[in-house]
Image (cartoon, rainbow, N blue to C red; front, side, top):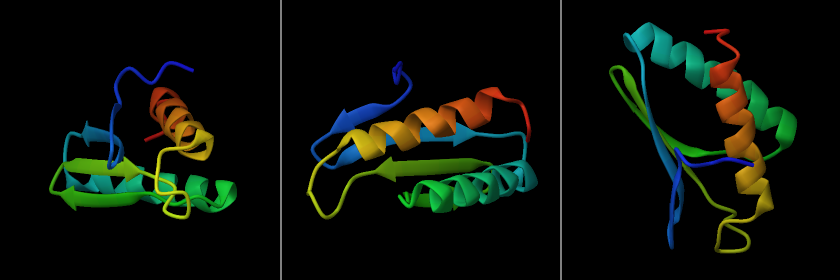
Length: 84
Protein backbone atom coordinates (compact mmCIF):
# COMPACT_ATOMS: atom_id res chain seq x y z
CA UNK A 1 0.00 0.00 0.00
CA UNK A 2 1.67 3.23 -1.17
CA UNK A 3 0.12 6.21 0.57
CA UNK A 4 3.03 8.61 -0.01
CA UNK A 5 0.67 11.42 -1.08
CA UNK A 6 -1.04 11.25 2.33
CA UNK A 7 0.32 12.85 5.51
CA UNK A 8 -0.22 11.10 8.84
CA UNK A 9 -0.06 12.87 12.18
CA UNK A 10 -1.77 12.44 15.55
CA UNK A 11 -4.98 13.88 14.14
CA UNK A 12 -5.42 11.54 11.17
CA UNK A 13 -4.38 10.72 7.65
CA UNK A 14 -4.63 13.84 5.44
CA UNK A 15 -4.54 14.70 1.78
CA UNK A 16 -5.51 17.68 -0.37
CA UNK A 17 -6.87 17.09 -3.86
CA UNK A 18 -6.90 19.89 -6.44
CA UNK A 19 -9.13 19.81 -9.50
CA UNK A 20 -9.73 21.94 -12.58
CA UNK A 21 -12.86 23.54 -11.14
CA UNK A 22 -15.64 23.27 -8.58
CA UNK A 23 -17.72 20.82 -10.63
CA UNK A 24 -14.82 18.38 -10.93
CA UNK A 25 -14.13 18.66 -7.20
CA UNK A 26 -17.80 18.05 -6.40
CA UNK A 27 -17.91 15.06 -8.78
CA UNK A 28 -14.93 13.58 -6.93
CA UNK A 29 -16.65 14.11 -3.58
CA UNK A 30 -19.78 12.36 -4.84
CA UNK A 31 -17.73 9.39 -6.01
CA UNK A 32 -15.85 9.22 -2.70
CA UNK A 33 -19.17 9.39 -0.83
CA UNK A 34 -20.43 6.29 -2.66
CA UNK A 35 -17.11 4.54 -2.03
CA UNK A 36 -17.21 5.46 1.68
CA UNK A 37 -20.76 4.13 2.01
CA UNK A 38 -19.70 0.87 0.38
CA UNK A 39 -16.79 0.55 2.81
CA UNK A 40 -18.90 1.80 5.78
CA UNK A 41 -16.14 4.24 6.70
CA UNK A 42 -16.57 7.96 6.17
CA UNK A 43 -14.09 10.82 5.77
CA UNK A 44 -13.93 14.15 7.48
CA UNK A 45 -13.59 16.58 4.61
CA UNK A 46 -14.01 20.10 3.33
CA UNK A 47 -14.29 21.71 -0.07
CA UNK A 48 -13.16 25.15 -1.17
CA UNK A 49 -13.82 25.81 -4.86
CA UNK A 50 -11.52 23.35 -6.66
CA UNK A 51 -9.80 21.85 -3.61
CA UNK A 52 -10.98 18.96 -1.44
CA UNK A 53 -9.25 18.29 1.88
CA UNK A 54 -9.77 14.81 3.34
CA UNK A 55 -8.90 13.60 6.83
CA UNK A 56 -9.32 9.94 7.71
CA UNK A 57 -9.35 8.74 11.32
CA UNK A 58 -11.18 5.98 13.14
CA UNK A 59 -12.99 8.09 15.75
CA UNK A 60 -13.97 5.03 17.78
CA UNK A 61 -10.28 4.11 18.16
CA UNK A 62 -8.95 7.67 18.38
CA UNK A 63 -6.25 6.89 15.84
CA UNK A 64 -5.51 5.95 12.24
CA UNK A 65 -6.31 2.28 11.60
CA UNK A 66 -6.18 -0.10 8.67
CA UNK A 67 -9.74 0.98 7.80
CA UNK A 68 -8.42 4.50 7.20
CA UNK A 69 -5.49 3.27 5.17
CA UNK A 70 -7.82 1.04 3.15
CA UNK A 71 -10.14 3.94 2.36
CA UNK A 72 -7.16 6.16 1.47
CA UNK A 73 -5.91 3.50 -0.94
CA UNK A 74 -9.39 3.13 -2.46
CA UNK A 75 -9.63 6.92 -2.91
CA UNK A 76 -6.24 6.94 -4.63
CA UNK A 77 -7.37 4.12 -6.92
CA UNK A 78 -10.57 6.00 -7.74
CA UNK A 79 -8.55 9.07 -8.67
CA UNK A 80 -6.09 7.02 -10.74
CA UNK A 81 -8.95 5.35 -12.64
CA UNK A 82 -9.64 8.63 -14.46
CA UNK A 83 -13.41 8.36 -14.08
CA UNK A 84 -13.96 11.99 -13.08
